[in-house]
Length: 223
Image (cartoon, rainbow, N blue to C red; front, side, top):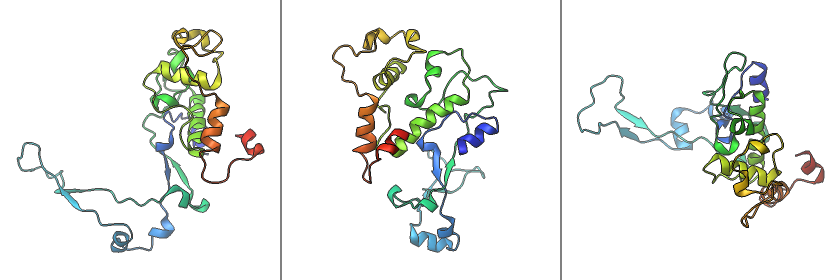
């Protein structure tokens, strides 16, 4: 809903991943508490004096005498009740209006970047780039880990992982110059590489990796 709202307003978020999705603070649990009660319920942060690396005194009036570690007000995800699950889409620092700005680069996590950002650097990003990242984020939220590996360090490794999961990407297959290093022209792995196709990832990550009830056949097809 948040992504759709941003799109209706004319903006592409540009950096959708789990770390940018926040749970709203439980106001009903905190609003009636005093500061002291909040400290007792969680903990009272200790002051950390601000010092200079050269050992000289701090004279600037804009610098506080102390800083504090933030108080963690969250809870384990399996303890969050449905009425409490009010999600906020955060960090619009890379958001842009495609009708007013041409964006060619994707700034989101490498494994979450849409294919068009990798294969066609001359094609401006649009709302569809958010949908691609959103789908991968939903998978990670539903499963025990991301669909695409988090231990990928280059674009070619990401594309190889996408091909392993989905097969050759028809629209961009010929544009991928490194394809012959890892796959045959038909998309089969070279060099004895072990691949994990989409169905196997689904079984491992979303079914076996769940502590709660697994998805039934109808839910699996819908997902």
